[in-house]
Image 1: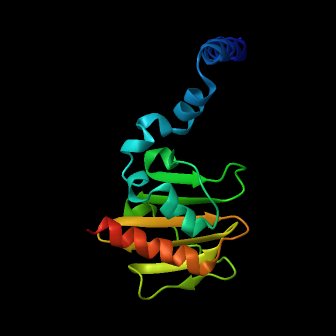
Image 2 (image 1 turned 180 degrees about the vertical axis):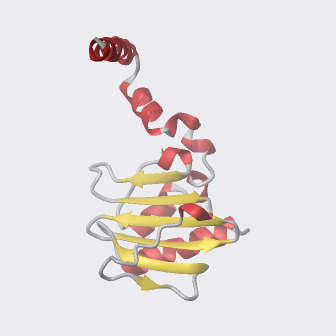
Length: 161
């Protein structure tokens, strides 16, 4: 009996969510589920750091406008085929990732505190700077270690102005 009631409640919730989803724009629903509906990308501080043309230099191909990522803590730019992209994320320092076990992980002693770079479906780099953790990534055939390190350095420079 207890399980029947739980199943019935779950079904009612599923039907309600499904009915609501059918009335909701799929992009809005995606944004609500991922947390990216917290504001427009145009007001996201990470999206304001670079123009499309500037970020395209790091990615190596033209990209579209910045989009919210990481629940609004980041911004992502991608090409029209979603085969190349760049992401800039700024989070509290307690969320700072250090992929030390990844083959190819390297310390960047001259980039912020605990700076690092590592291969990651392209390349990722991160550093602790003042009171935040900054992590950037570039994916795609043209991504390089050098380009992701330059992107991290430029994010740090632009955020500290």
